[in-house]
Image (cartoon, rainbow, N blue to C red; front, side, top):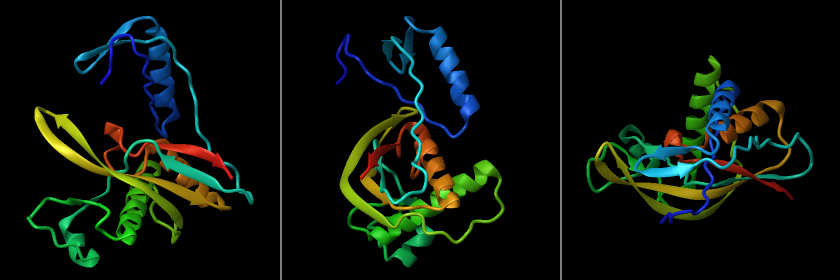
Length: 198
């Protein structure tokens, strides 16, 4: 519940730096003004640019942690491969804790590669294991209302641990940090943070 006069932070992330610069300029021009988001009105009190960056390859560990739930949807043509037998004929099923972590990792990697290749017009996907060590935090159900219809989105929160990485792996992980992990990123899902080195 958002109360009147409370302070909220809106974070916008994208691999497109020119898009971020345009948004930043427009928000700077609106400082002190009221803007509407849905049915709510907010006043912009400040704009602060920030770009989380993966550390260069080193012996230290980097941890990416999900700030918002990661959504992974599994289409029907993959159900048999993953041993999934839903009770009804859904358009897709959300990855949940009842499914194997291998399913989550495989779908997550494929989604990130697809976004990366599409954004950079890459022709081929190199054989590269992106996620080697991850820690499940929790599963959440998020109510969502779009175009007058209500639904429930199932997402999960994780910590991803990375040791030394080569240039290619670091590039695609940085892209994931900017674009988001999983699906429905434009709705705010899959927002990632760099937790730090340990």
